[in-house]
Length: 191
Image 1: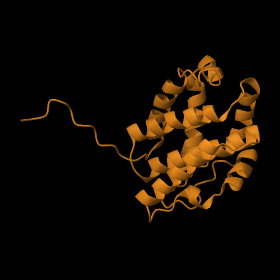
Image 2: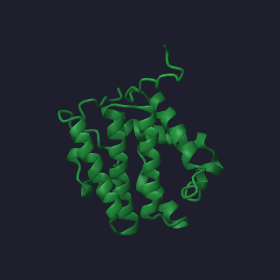
Image 3: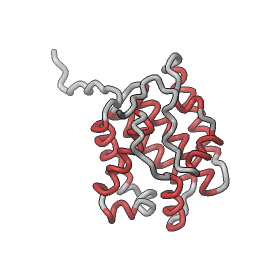
Image 4: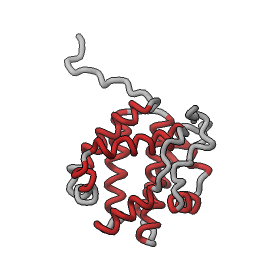
């Protein structure tokens, strides 16, 4: 007898800018109404997601596919947010929870895993730069994700695997936070 519940659709890996845009729309749809994150993201809500989305698509397309589209400084933008609304470890943890949930529900594969690892590494470095402190929870989450990716994809070198946290902090500070794809075997270059 056939099942009365539809089968879960097969999830593929992130492969295109359209994939990134779909993921970001779902992610920000959650963030902008989240009890903890609504205030820090109020400016995006006020200006509209459509004005922010192309920048974030450029950022993630650069991080994941080496497209070299994003030329800004993610740290500078978040310093401005931090000035208006103090960002703490709990904000970064919630952001990462929503991010990893969204990525995991929509995509499956090495690039999707790397999207989560990169987000964790960036959040950890950004928290350190903004607050001047480490977070045991962010450190533990970063370690768990890196181990999981290495176990799931032992022959696929994580682009984050060759980038230590001091380097991530330096790149965030100097507007180079997206240059994580240098060693990724699945990187594609804009051309």
